[in-house]
Image 1 (cartoon, helix red, strand yellow):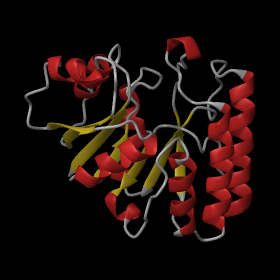
Image 2 (image 1 turned 60 degrees about the horizontal axis):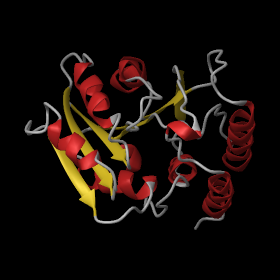
Image 3 (image 1 turned 180 degrees about the vertical axis):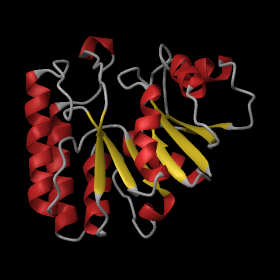
Image 4 (image 1 turned 120 degrees about the vertical axis):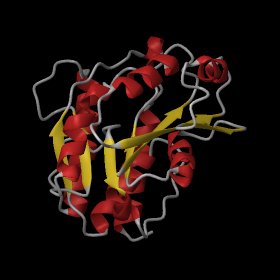
Length: 231
């Protein structure tokens, strides 16, 4: 069985090398892995940092470039298009989430207990998330639960893991951060259950490169309602 680790990246020259290193340091037992880096039109030294990685010439590491910056959703979709694994995992290119959580994220799928697993930042007590972002996430998660009958605690989490079959027939259109509510809504609408496991979280500040903005919350609401209406 193979795990495809999809890393969407935009202007992360300071962290992408370490992220790749951490991903490769994780013990996966007998699980094969491939890393697919989707460079979303970065304008800094991200491409140079990728090329300078010790794993740059490893055939299990594949890197694809978008000529322009389109958004996280577009980058993840680019990575999904080239993924060959039986299990698909999205790994952000910053250092907010720790690849050492992979064992916890993958266990329910490998044990046959789930087809979709989300890493929740709120199942365990954490004081890391700023109140404004915590409230925004709580509202969007609550709206998801109301619209789709789910019981999620962290719809906006970046750690999302899927068995390949769970995405069969699901057509993704969003190109920005509205990818998160879109894929969640469409997975739930397909009748599949999402299992959450607790994860740690070390958020960045805006001056450290945090990219999400208030308008992304508006886009998320629109994406959820649009998916509920069947679009």
